Image (cartoon, rainbow, N blue to C red; front, top):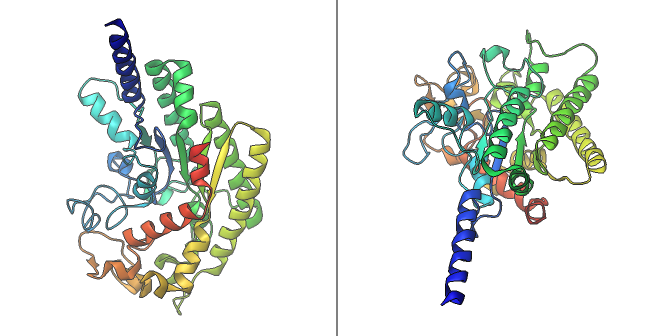
Length: 362
């Protein structure tokens, strides 16, 4: 009898531990911690009272399950949703939502299953959000994560928390707003514009490096980091050109940033032997969308689906805007963001063409 009870007790203990860590056989990682901008914001900006960078109103979310806006700058799912699907976990919920709900219930939020700090308007530098009045800068996002880290240590214990975080993925999608802000005509932002564009890009990279090291000090070991896509080809940039062509200067410096980012990550790996990372080349796939649209089923590359005015980019996607019925034909949902279809294809392509699978298995 004793021999039959012991395995049952052992199984129950193991099953309980699995539930506690939020990790099951169906999942490839125990959790994902997301940092970034509106490309992966899943609702944090809904909780920023004075922010103009919000998507919690129609026609955003028209194709999302339930057909309601969620705070995603998309007609449906965004890159964060698709990346979560790839690793077999639910989308990490917005940090500010979790804190708000816990406060209303007078309880403590649990971040074991992951959380997203991403915020529309955010950049590597503080100041990218100035035109939107309020967002969570990357520095603020990392600061919020430090409180999550302390919470996990308290909940799981130091050893278990470190083991949990070492197996989790830290996804970082950032930098587009820095480049767009720097090259925006007549921009009055507080971005550090002294010096040359190369110095600006170099400063972006060194600032990001410092924040990655800070995350490492707080348990991060597996990073999934995207480069900047061809941001000069979004409708907001094309409309500044009478021909509707891309802003090639912005694209050029996006590629320079990407080159510097890859070099920085290689150097960081040499310094911090226990980290692993996957660099996702979003620029190449986005460029291929534009060069070979028929391959992906796109027929409209320049105009946004939702908006008003020239290329539907004079007015953002707000309730008074019009939106297209053929959303799967469009590369862009609004003046800055890809459609759900484009985001899904991009994640599929970069995921399958990178070392993310090896990163997860490491």
